[in-house]
Length: 498
Ligand code: NAD
Ligand code: RBV
Image (cartoon, rainbow, N blue to C red; front, side, top):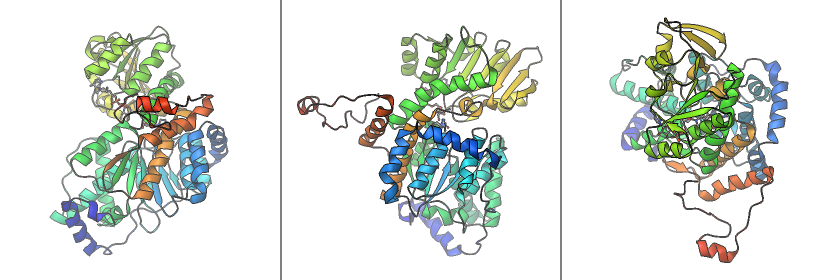
């Protein structure tokens, strides 16, 4: 169905594969009804969902607006996004709109087991529990991507791009095998990449055409987070995108709210629930001053911390300086920080050597999407002795006796050590997700990366105003003409930065 939109290389390979299709119809995975920690938690999960629905006016009003038309009926939809209470409400919204949903989490530590149980109880296939191994995590992603009859999804909700990555990796492997008659050598030493490489080879042995069979039915993916969007932009530039993609993160009502105000509250939640440390008076080093870094720095400042920011971008560095934060290099403040938070979406921000130089009892954590911001593997392989105080809270002692604490094993601290953002802000993010899914399902657009039009971005904000007793001023026609907009909006140019 989507072959016409692929680049010429891919089209050639698809034709070759279709000729062979049907050779093997083995299921690539034994389809389980669900896999969660403990079904008896479903009642608690349902209470939390009931309470949070009242805090998610965007999602609830989209349900009201669209449920009777069932715009997602007949669409198979896979989600790979933190299996929290808020996500449960997103799932139930997508189901209300008619979608056939399967779900996995996008992080090994971010599932709220009670929310997962509540969703499983309704008969929706969900594969997620807090504390998965990497092997389990990727098996769960595969389960979520595999519908009865060995079918794949039509639509994907992704956070960080792992579902998209698995499909593209599997597809590439089939291309390689079809061309060379064998598998490429595995060269990576990264433990997670090794797991993925092994999984796609396992799938290939069961069904050599699986990914080529399912890709033509995939309309597109909507991507939740900055890091996932960065991956999609690279794939689009390299002409590797196999289906359409919708950039949810860069809606103003996502990144300027969730990344900023969400982290402003959930960072402290994660730090406090794990360490119970007093924050006032401490020196906090925030690495990165983008949307997430701004929220984190403001949060720590509000607790009475001295905040130091590190940045590579002069504009963000200047913003930090003009907010009154010290802007320094990490190396120059390693012995000053009581707490270090990485927020960059980049890798190797805090190295093993950096951790050796930190002051005794320093706390180290990351709130960026992936755990490679801190060199955790190197720390684990080093001469530092690791003791688990409790899950997602570890103490490392270096040979010189100095100790540091690592939260959530370097994974997103707000979701690993707490329950992620609060519901209200996730309602703005997830309203964007629903609008993106409706767009993909209705338009079946050509393979490209899309953004939400400003009218809809403004509409998402509008849906949330009443909940906060905010009254919007209405332009007069005369005023609208004077500033060159329509009375009903949009009110800003696309380039406006908020
Ligand atoms: P962003 O691009 O707005 O900000 C990242 C900042 O880090 C940029 O200003 C960049 O210049 C800076 N940076 C890059 N390399 C650096 C380095 N070596 N040292 C210092 N600074 C550096 O991105 P964002 O929207 O703030 O997102 C950051 C990360 O957080 C992403 O991985 C995103 O997916 C994730 N995220 C997590 C949550 C959560 O709930 N945990 C929420 C939203 C986003
Ligand atoms: N995030 N989800 C939650 N409570 O479900 N909290 C944070 C939740 C998302 C957020 O949108 C961010 O972009 C992404 O997690 C990073 O993986």
